[in-house]
Length: 129
Image 1: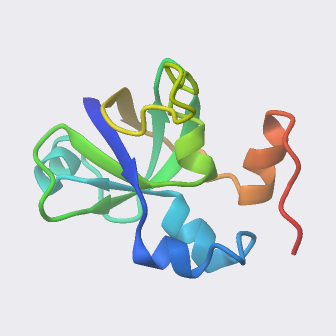
Image 2: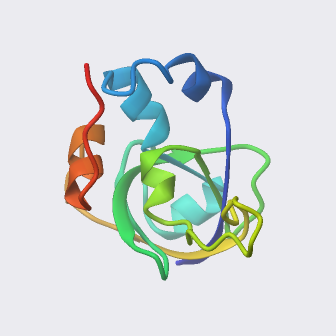
């Protein structure tokens, strides 16, 4: 399925920002919020794993139904999983385009990487506990 990724802050993500290695932060940051009809089309249940791919990269996340999203729209809170997908180009503003990133979503049996794994995979440093 092709879709448009929007990112932003969530209250839950913000409440765990000081504990980025915690299971609760991972659960929030690795959630791909989707329109329920799109989930049905992909034969996904809540909690199914999906590979989300953009021109920037790909990452395995957890599908979650969300009210208020139109078909073809998906949402991920800001964090390491979203950063895999958003183009770092800032157009001279110092901020990447966190909205309207084209993505492809497909079911997978792969595991969702931990925050530490995702940070280290591309040369970053894992957050301290």
